[in-house]
Image (tube, rainbow, N blue to C red):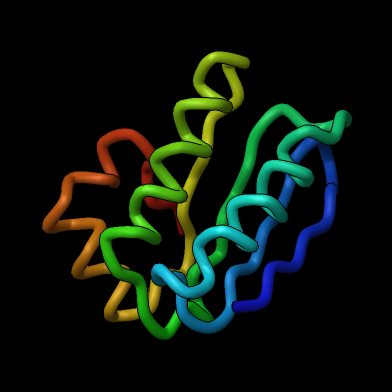
Length: 102
């Protein structure tokens, strides 16, 4: 699992690449928490175009980050979901808390 980020125009852009599952969840959680702890952004966009697989552990990682940012009033949006991620987000209702944007 690879996690890349950059801040541009008050937005934190995050790209998740690979598989977000029980094997990568711990390290991904730590990386995201470090990124989300930075200053200088008012919203987060997570790009899932390179996410090949996500299981329930990966869903938990994203929900946990959502809850943390919700407390800070910083919204999280999803863009470019892979077919696999799109299916999971629709089935679980995650788009209701982390809307999909174009």
